[in-house]
Length: 295
Image 1 (cartoon, one colour):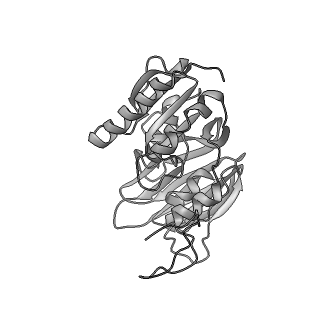
Image 2 (cartoon, rainbow, N blue to C red):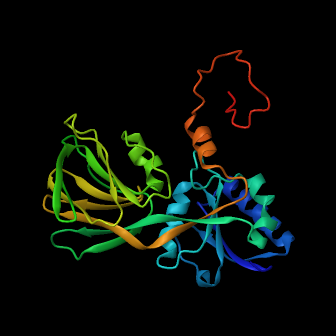
């Protein structure tokens, strides 16, 4: 990648902390003389010249990246996520590390890892079908005290009928999001697969299911009160019995920049606390252990 790389700078939202981080990154970018900011805005809000950018820098957390990849639509540009949030599986680069990696970005000294995205079509009686591009998951769920009954078909074949609080269809990237909290497994992020996870199912035999990303997944709401389809935890469409969501692999992939030194399993270790040892006051730590979580 040549010098003077055109980039866009996207932020989670406003606020003093975000403003200060954006100002620092912009100053360092300008000082480098090799990366030129051609646009700046809130993630999820299209910029007039974003088509000219060769990469995007997103400051915030994973939620900002989810909005940004919907913003890019059918032209997914490489994204580097600078973590100003809490967990951050996608936005996992700390501000100090990012500002020390500007030459690597300008030189193209990084990997661009492509990740499965989905296209969800929400079909509701009385409405035109709506299509959404997403990265993490689609959830059909009841927001009322009552439970939902949801029928799942895969490639036209009935797979199961769930009585549960909801049903999640997730990508591998999304396997560490809502699906994980519902008891689903963690999938390696480059697997070409979808993960189906019921939320609090009323049958012990209802377990998470992993299947091919080439299939068509149809979720039909059979029974529920105050139900909705939720896209990446950010967009909601109310549903009534008989409405359905059809999920397919998208024609584009999310393109995530991984800077030198990134270690996927080390990230899981840190973020999920896979230390394997209980922590207690006075525990002696190994000061050279790079994976030590601290207290």
